[in-house]
Image (cartoon, rainbow, N blue to C red):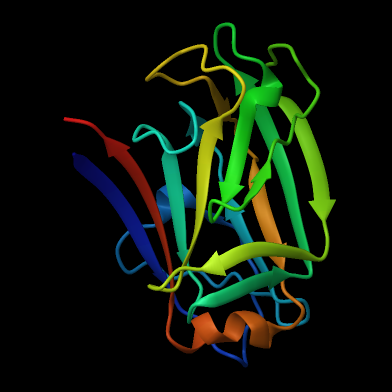
Length: 194
């Protein structure tokens, strides 16, 4: 099994977090720094434009985003939101595209839309929300996958168009501050069988 990894070191501190900007996952390489925490709200935004859903949960073809959050334990968000522009491929339906956080919480942004779509916008929020537990290495994981049917095995079933993002609002900057004390590492991993 071969792994492709892209990562970024995102530095933040408890004070002086004046700039909140969106981090696109394809720009997450090397020493690039991007401040993503709003000091008043503790907001963290990830642009997921271009990420695709391939197969059922746990399949090695799926995209897995890993975010270093800090010490192991539960992750509570005051609010979790999404603004996703979804396009399906072939016979895939919009309601099959799913994001799962830490193998615990699953979100199907187009739930109920049992038809194909092209650049269809889905927005929503959930609050407050337990996103699962940070693993023993300090990571929160987000897997992009299909549910119900896998219309294109080992190939893209749907993908998120330009302008697609997820955001997390933490109760205070201190909640994200554990990660901010050191660094926030965001990685993209797509496992591909040899």
